[in-house]
Amino acid sequence: MSKSASGALLSTVEIDRNLKVPLYKQVENFLRGLILDGILKPKQKLPSSRELAEDLSISRITVKSVYEQLIAEGYLKSKTGSGTFVSEDLEFFSYKKLKSVMVKPAEVEGKLPDRVDPINLSKATIRYGETAPFRPGLPALDRFPIKSWNKYLFNAMSESGRYNLGYGSLNGSRDLRRSIAQHLADARGLRVDAEQIVITSGAQQAFVLISFALLKAGDTVWYENPGHIAGRDVMTAMGANVMPVPIDAEGLDLDYAKNNFDIPKLIFATPSHQHPLGITMSLARRLSLLKFAGNNNSWIIEDDYDSEFRYRGRPLPALSALDEERRVFYVGTFSKALCSAVRLGYVVVPEWLIETFAKATNLLGQNASPITEAALAQFINDGRFAEHIRKMRRLYRDRRDTLIEDQIAYEALLGKGIESLPLSVYCLQPIERTALVLGFSGVPRKRMPKLVKKMSETLRSIH
Ligand SMILES: Cc1ncc(COP(=O)(O)O)c(C=O)c1O
Image (cartoon, rainbow, N blue to C red; front, side, top):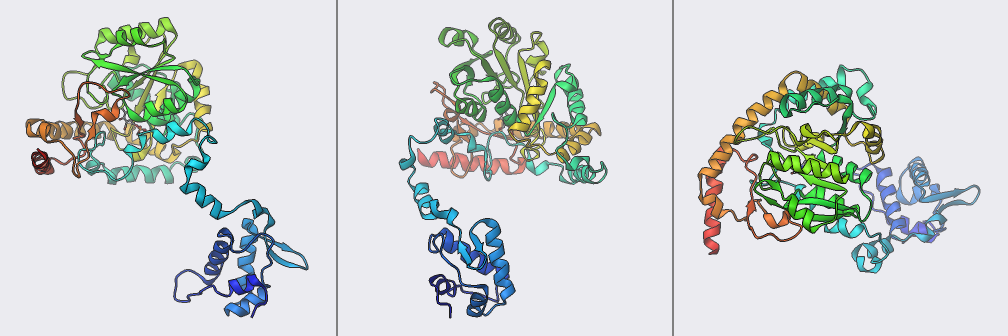
């Protein structure tokens, strides 16, 4: 039997030889736990490997390998000639203390940077987690071409040599940037050089980059109200004063903003399809907005998140296509046209900022994978992307018509297990209109009537 206190403690480890967890791992986890819980104290001596091996009826080699591992992790120290000890470096650390901080945030209030509050208040996490029918902004995941996409992923790994296994190019795959430039010319009337495109891990990373590069604390931002949640919240977290600009029949109400707010450093707009109200910004408003930005040295973010899908009228070219002064950052994403899990988007930046943006992407963590970039470039070049969009356009029109035809839905949309979002969530300031926002593209047509009926019954039952 070990004589030391630590030896007595350690001999209580319950080794279960029926478990799949190997013996050395069981002892290692137990020992690590005793140290983290503060039961074994810094500088405390451990039993020799021979003693412990005897106590636990395991081999001395096993105990030695446990000690070596914990020495490598910094939990233990070995002193030649004297034995093995709990590391004295852990003197200032107490897991118990850490736990109590975690449950009592009030104790650290005032010690955390100002940025923590807006991060905690952010509603941007709404888009995470499991999804239920009618969640806004979700494409038809049931129709994602998994088999075909897998082939492209497979080829990106196996055919293109080892290049895709590294970090890739600074501003994203050249092939993908070329494919996107071509797509923008065909679909959005935008003539951009592939060199102006910086690949991101989605629109949100583009908003983070732009905010990081352009905004100082206290800068004014004009932001559509109601408007996209995650973009607004990152600007607030960066310390900007984000001002809510109402939406009228022509889009962002420029006159209102001019009369009520300071000149902005940045304006955020969704001209093609206002998010979430769906209004298309008129040509006159686009021209006024560009003129205003040019005259006042303001930048504009054009978030063109779902321009591939239109169900009424012909699409206007992108705002960016009219931008002669180069004030617009055009942001695109594949989250809607494909799915958000591909984590690919891009920002078209004015020529003189390309390198800055590419470097900023890297600085903040290059989240796009060269493997998916390569797969997507080929997917676009082979016409698969255009084909998928055509199919989805038909499907979404059909699902949308099914929803709209049924007028009950408009009155009955109240969630009990049905994931609509209240319009107020999108608002920085309350607006008069009240509504629930529904995403139709993720709900198969067949399920639509049943779900609408369920919604209607729920609503009736609460009146
Ligand atoms: C208005 C708007 N812009 C952009 C995005 C896309 O974000 P991301 O590309 O980061 O997935 C979304 C998705 O929720 C959105 O609703």
